[in-house]
Image 1 (tube, one colour):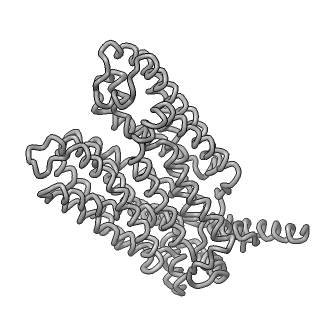
Image 2 (cartoon, rainbow, N blue to C red):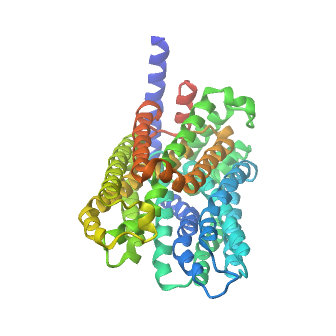
Image 3 (cartoon, rainbow, N blue to C red):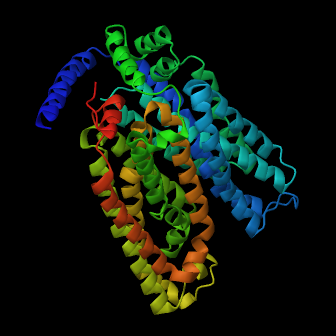
Length: 492
């Protein structure tokens, strides 16, 4: 055993020396350009997520009775996207293996454009639903394909930073549509939201396919050409190409269900699934849903800007995460993020407990604006606790549990199982998002509002424990080294 450990250590040391020599000759200009074009997809995805916030209030009071939404229809208009996205995740898992990352990304732009076209031309509520489902399908495919595309293009020095740009562009899209919603009606907002996916189709026409997918299909010449584009003219791309091909040759040509018995497949799959479960059980949807209400209870004079302020906090801290990702590492940021969310959701629970006990006013009553006038001053006295908790939670989530599960998903799966495993993880994420969104009011009725947030706090605590026990650090490692670690074999 000692001899094997020593051999593995020597191989790793030799490989790291070659790796550093190679990376010193790499130029990232074209890599950054390809990443910028690809993350127009997550920006489109962010526009879809944020669109319902400014559109629903207008559609609920629109003069045309055929398009006017009641409370239940408004709920479906907002949440039906998650069902479309779950289906899109399954579709995306099939597409990336069959037609490749680049073409999948180009094709997923079409449902974005078609969906917004249906919304713009809507003559009844069902057309609005159809448009939202189509944009949801596109969002599901995008949330799977873009992280894979970036991780397979990028080298280990910048993979964390570039991978974090996925979530950064999502929150930029959300904040952008919130801002635009202040000045535009729902139809013009849909027109503007269709611009990023249109640019994505055009831009991706000039971008390369990922070298790993090309090598998996036996296209070595095309893979080397793609690497030369991404690494610059001075890098000896034959070395990287040979390393990727050697790792690919150790795997079967295609994924089969029996491969789930392989520890190199089932371990990263379980980690990916649990990351998405904990992400959704953190309470992010609850916090975002009641953000405006919390601002109103604090007598924030410009409560319509609440969503923009929330989005700005997300953008700032997601940007910070992107900058420090490849220095601090994934694991430590997940732990810091989980602790911050634990503290903030616990404090939220205290806030709602004190409000309900002191004034006998529930969050549901707050949302319906039927609270007693004399309780408003007391609400203001405690508003600092709610506002601080919300800011800490959003900052903590954006720093770790927002971007990192998507980044790790794109890093840990072996090439042969990447499409299937990513589809399972994306389906888990969107399925959990739908369940939490639709059952949140029932949870508050059963557990009380304070109890629900304390439950979220418990889940955040468990996420920290899970991270410390099971999440591997992938900072500075190649995708082939990560695969080898899960298989328990020396990295080539």
